[in-house]
Image 1 (tube, rainbow, N blue to C red):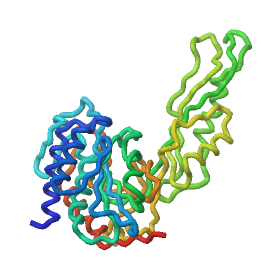
Image 2 (image 1 turned 90 degrees about the horizontal axis):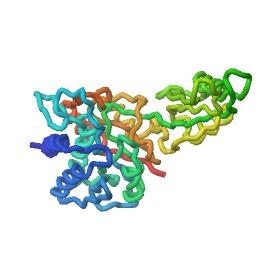
Image 3 (image 1 turned 60 degrees about the horizontal axis):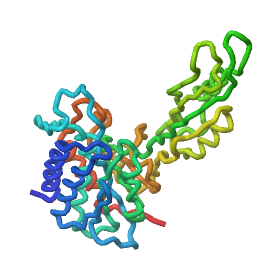
Image 4 (image 1 turned 30 degrees about the vertical axis):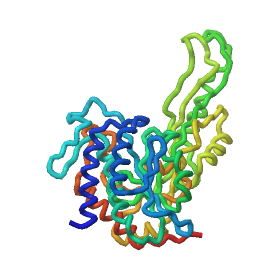
Length: 357
């Protein structure tokens, strides 16, 4: 049995155990224990902070660039539509069903297996593997909380189910709480200044406005009004109308830049809940992307948000499994997908040369 086969089989067995441990966001401690004990059995120097762990393949050499292999340990809560037990690893032929099998247990253990295959090799870069928490809720105690501890990173490979194709761009997310102000009055008389009517003009702007910069991978920025609230009773003109806008950004804009543009056009108050979840992009000329293309992989833009959004260095999203299965009843992954994923990671990482400034 080759080293790749050995570590892949162990990774699959570890995934089965992970499925059977409840690991909702902020409740990942038991599954982190499992991962930590496995890596310690490989005589690795495992670091842990909260429900996040990371490990270097060898002593860090600051003269070399650093590649991070990262995916998350947490899962969403299962719906009542599951026909299988979500906390049982059910294997039927090649198909493994269970909560977190696809998002993102499969990508996580595939990255781990690739890391273990490479840990004893002389590499032209530092290699670090991290299994982190709270991705599903974009939590502050997830990967963002340990990036400074890990150190400077030149490339991050974020394991999410992409069918092992290369997500070279990822949409950012900004949620806006907006409020239009008016003046209260009696609806039966010509009194007041209806905040709901004032909000309608801004809502129409959010519906129709098109930003100039369109991404070749992600298309245009998309703004959607998703919630509206105004008024307290039928005969009172509302003096306030609050509404929420879901903004999905392409890589051409930062959240801060887009907010500044929006404020120039609308009359309502606009308060972003956060600027944290920016869009991501990696150059098509990056050595990782070029090697992927040589292997016949496809480059595309991902509409879903991941931990890339909180990483301020170059990243690419890529992993086994299918995003369409994520957060769905009877989530599953094929073992053959995991095996293929380990092989593709290794084919790209072996001999990869990063050019740093």
